[in-house]
Amino acid sequence: MSNLMFCLNATMPIFLTMMLGYAFRKWHIMDGSFVDKMNSFVFKVALPVLVFQDLATVDFFEAWDWKFVVFCFLATLISITAVTLLSFLLKDKSLQGEFIQASYRSSAAIFGIAFIQNIYGEAGMGPLMIVASVPLYNIMAVVVLTVMRPERGRGNGALIRKTLHGIITNPIIVGILTGVVWSVLKLPMPVILHKAVSGIGGVATPMGLMAMGATFDIKKAFGKIKPTVIAAFIKLVGFVAVFMPLAVVIGFRREKLIAILVMLGSATTVSSYVMAKNMGHEGVVSSSVVMLTTMCSAFTLTGWLFIMKCFGLV
Image (cartoon, rainbow, N blue to C red; front, side):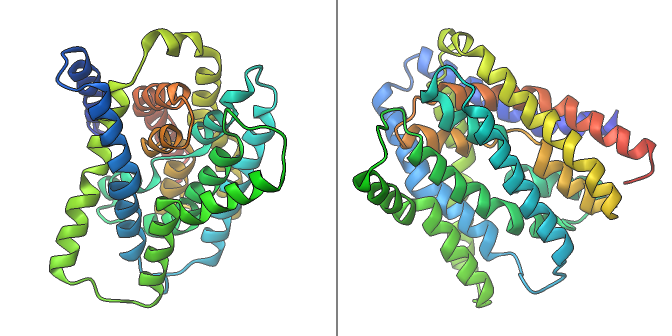
């Protein structure tokens, strides 16, 4: 019961914040122009700062575990490849980019550390999981959303150049590279800078959630319910069912298994909607999957945790 309550305490505020954004739009507290500007700020400023903070504050050389990092990286890469191939079965090809991203991209950084700390009292292997998966999450999200834009045409040199330029200049990529360099060089984080970075990065999630809720269209969501449900099932159940037994066979236990569980089976991150919306996609599938996985993850994560406890793995 305590695990269920923790999951509810972790996920319900997210869903309620999204509902506030939806209500604020209906009550005309937010209009379309305001929501668009808020989306732009989150994508260009707050989210890159949050990613930078996550990576810059992780010590790459302390408690490094190559086997764990390689497993997380390969599991993420295989997951992305699998859903990319699956996306070609969609009738509406304009949904491919959003479907792929929503199916694999977890709330590893935002939700993962809190989940692990709640169980073990410390972050444990969370930072290593973030190092192995989050940069790949974001880089591949930029690639997928750029290459599979709804208005894409036949492949040509101009499209390739535009894609490469979009990847290089993407604010999320800049945040990742800056954070990695900062961490590798072990640059100090002065208190003033740390507080400023924490303050700016801290608004990324609530602002992104409210913006997503404000643009959520229930009619459109139900009109695209099939890809939404499929992506949510893959995100919460599919990948965990495939990779968790393999992780157990390899020998991972306790906090390593919990970190892998969060990486594979936590709700789709809010930033997937923000990135999709700001890179020429409609955003309906992204917001729908985030809402559905957020509502259901409290129960699926608790179920997976209960199974692992029954087998004495955590």
